[in-house]
Image 1 (cartoon, rainbow, N blue to C red):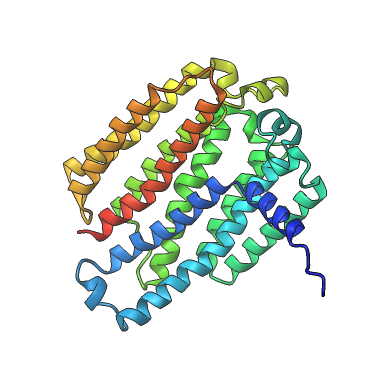
Image 2 (cartoon, one colour):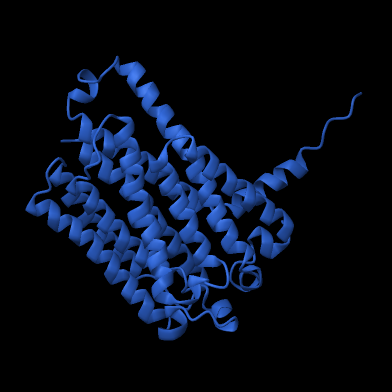
Length: 323
C-alpha cells in the first residue's frame, strides 16, 4: 500500500502561524475593513436604493462589491501580520515571560522563520495595495510605518506610554477608518468628502484604541518591568490603569449615545442609543467582577474588550444602512 503523506508538520506550522498572526487583531482588521465598506455604501445608496437604485443589477453589483472587499482585505491582513510579527521579533525575551505561548517565545518558530514571514507579509501588503490605488497604498503603508516605529529600535515607541498609545489609536482610529472609507467611497463613485458619521466612528475608535493600548500592558507588567519598558502599568500600577481604561471606554460609548440622542444624520439614532447604553451597563457589570491579582481573569477581560471592539464594526454599519 502506498504510504500517505504525514500532514501533521503542516498542521503544526499552520497552527503556529495562526498564533503568530494574533487572531484577535486579524478579526478586528477584517471586521473594520468590511464595516467601513458598508458605511461607504450607505453614503451612496440609502434605504430601498440599496436594492433598486444601484448602477447595475442587484446581484452583479453586490458581487463586484464583495470582490472589492476581498481584494482590499488581502493586503490589509498582510500588513496586520507584518505589524504583529515585527512586534514579536523585537520582544522575544519579554514574551518568554508575558506570552510564552507565542511561537517565537515557545520556539515553534525560529527568529529566521519569523523574519521571513514578516518580510513576505510586508511585501505582499505593499504590492497588492499599490495595484489597487494610492488611497489603499497610503492606508496600508502608513499603518506599516507606524507599526515599524512602534516596535523597531532605535525609535521603539512602545517604550514610551504616550507615544505608544498615540501610535496604536492613530492606526486603528484615524488611518484605518478614514483610509478605507475613502478607498471604498472612491470605488463606489463618490467624492472625497468624509461625513460626520465617519468622524464619530473615528472618535469612538480613537478612545477605544487608547483604552486597549493601556489595558494590554496590565497582564504584561512582570516582563515589562524586568526589561525596563516603562508602560503606564509599570509607572502607575495595574489598578489605576484598569480604572482609567474603564472610564475611557465608558466615555467612548456614552459619547456615541449622546451624539445619537442629539441627532446624528444618516444613521438610525435609536439603534445607536440603545446598543451603546446597553454595552456600557454590561461593561461595568463585568469590570466589577475582575480580580486584578488573577492574571487569567485580567487576560480574559482584555480579550472580551476586543470582542466589544469587533462588535462596534457590526453595530455602526447597521445604524448607517438602517435609515
